[in-house]
Length: 308
Image (cartoon, rainbow, N blue to C red; front, side, top):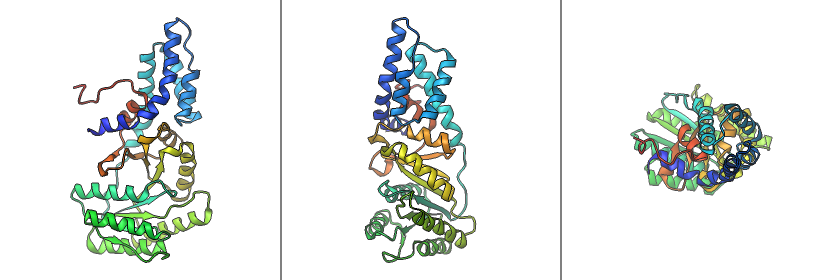
């Protein structure tokens, strides 16, 4: 399945959430009544697009004067894509080794995301090193080692309970000494409301910079789409503490709350770079604003290739 089609298919549950709102637009238009966006507004908020973003989009729709359902749907799709497209223009750093730090709360899929990104980098011909800095859970270290064995990639690790910052320092030093292209660092899950745990993560970032002054080059926040608006509060906290450079949204195919992607970009100005649309290694796909907008709103069914 092409990337575009994966994104559209992965947003099916979120698209169904908006369907009833569009049906109300159809009903009013077919009866010759003034179109009301109240039901569509409720559906957009239910899809976790967020109150502020929903109000802005509906205000634009009202100004457009569109009455027919198809025109409203196409206009909303265009507005969503335009909102997300600037966040795609950020070019990735070209440092070597490129140091990527993955952060997030427990259970969002950080370790699996790191492994999938490593697999992708390997498939592109780049040398990769992994660092197991979730030293609080022995299972997390073992999980990353299993992935490393599967991918043929070395994993820098220490014993459970070790200082995660020390592991990160060793990993950056090893990556530089070996001439590695990309170092992916898996961190421990941090409850964003616990300041002491966040402070430890800030320490990891600071120690990485001591080993390589311009690193980490990417700080990827992994968010679970199923938690909806709680993901936005997580994003606020991690961004304030660390200066997040990109978002990875996982489990997008299993939730009707896919609008959270739009809410995060709108509020924080942090780009969504990857979408998790399943369990397989190739189910982590690069973010595409136009495909996401079509997947969420469903103005058309055909991918660009099908449209010729």
